[in-house]
Image 1 (cartoon, one colour):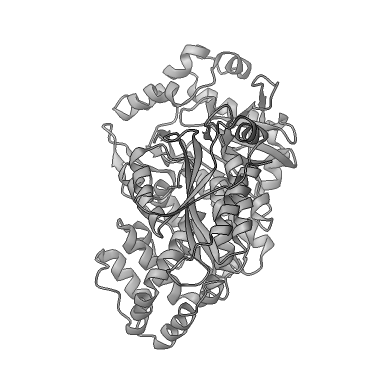
Image 2 (cartoon, helix red, strand yellow):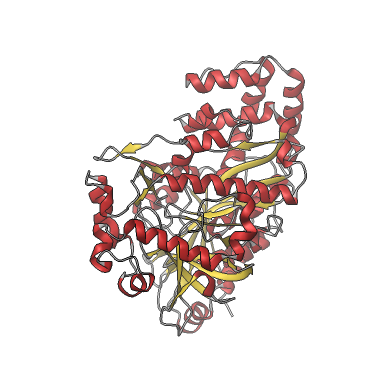
Length: 568
């Protein structure tokens, strides 16, 4: 059998032999799992691929949750997996509305390390000198919880950060010591990441965060704390409120002694009226930003380009708690054009067609068709079999025989008042058009979410926007004309059915933008994390369904704007 371990140097071989490798992966998984209680019901101990496709059903989380819960509560892991389950990975709990846990074993961490190494190799081929410098990481490992079985539960990214795989791989790659990443208190960790990064500014070639929202949050934190950071650098002492001792001691070693010259330089940049290009001003050797900017993270592209003076935004990989899928082999493409090349050795992948008229036809990885839309199914090494991911992807090309996919949206995340159905993709497209209108003003969109308000008749779409001035002023001057035009532009960007129902039938009211105070989306994040969402994987929900979350937004509303014309 083919060696299924992954060497980053083998990208071309992997993508040239995608079909054979996928067959080998499925054979290995079925050989391991055919006698598990879960598969025994369908395969009766057989590991035949055709029987697998014929008998094993396509499932959602609710179908496999009883088996996962049994393992979490102490039953042997071999009821679902032939490989020992070593822990559970927790989904973010924000995109689909509910948190889920998924069984995991060491292969997940091996794959994560491999895909990180491959991403590093890809960017170094396109940008000179990145291997000689360091990245400022905005990584935050969070404390693990424990199931009744004694197995740990944490987000996929936190689990990786806490593993020896990350500690061994990350040596000398980042400006922050591991003690900062492991600090359990988010504010202390963020402060120390920035302090370490600023002190080592001459070595920095990139900034890195799991999601674009995390990176924007880091720069916002810097805006609020730069004076104190500069004071620490000037005195050579870490602020007293940094109380995590291991974090404090490790940062003190990096800080060294007083450095008034560096403090003066940083203060001069931070005092300037505009923070346009602040990343390249504070870290002048920075060559790129590494963070996910696809899907709902695309809303942060404009503000990151503003902060970074339009440095390349490298969206490196497509991964989740269920599996790692692929990498971006074209790191210098426009962020709006990112596609991920699926690698055939991570899991066994199938695809349900979601194009109209195809009756949910299921095809293998190498049989997808250019331009078509699919939902991926995952069969992995830790007990998921033909599991529906809930993502919608479009085939954008091929790298040898391996398909490349553009992330389109999460499935079934929609707004609807009447007969129309507005998808996540529709929302993001409309938002991108509206931000072009914002460019005529001094304003930048920092964050958004939306919901359907049916308390009035007719019901209408409400978008909550947090805005920032392009200067460092805390005062945001709201231009009524510009924001009303944003409302109209969004409506004109929605699909034909929305426009028809809105214009002819009158059963949808005028779209509304409610501008909220700065910091509102930080409060929203704190609410969801308190409710159990993963802090390291947090993504602002595109659509809000929680009445408590809506209350947080509503109490912060500064102004309301409505479209003043029906869309054509």
